[in-house]
Amino acid sequence: MGSSLRAVALCFAAGAAGGLMQCLMAWLAAQYGITRALNAHVATALLPAVIYARVVLGGLWGLLFLLPLSRGALVRAVLLGLVVSLVMLVIHPVLAGKAVHLLNGTALFIVLLNLVWGMTTACLLWLMRG
Image (tube, rainbow, N blue to C red; front, side, top):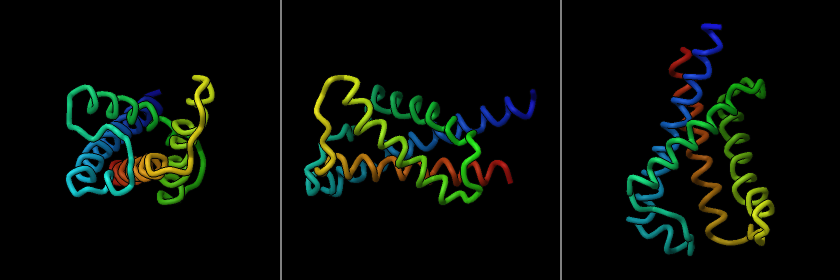
């Protein structure tokens, strides 16, 4: 049980750090005008509520790294980043009875942020597991 609890804790911690990296990347993108250029409507301010939500959700999504998918860190990072994007952009709006919009700057920016999350999480897990 000790090793499985350790794996859960590591995946949550790495995912939470990935969520924090998402916050920083979104903020930097806003500072450099990238969100404006993409016409992306995503929370970019470094407010406690935004940081908290991304860190906690990033940690929960980090538990996906417990699934036995691919051994390659890069493949897992991209695949799981795309899974999170699929849930955020398709499944969540459908369940909420809203329209799905995939061909706009906001969707592209969300996918990019989730790839940042996936890469950060995978890199940290690789470093922590040695």
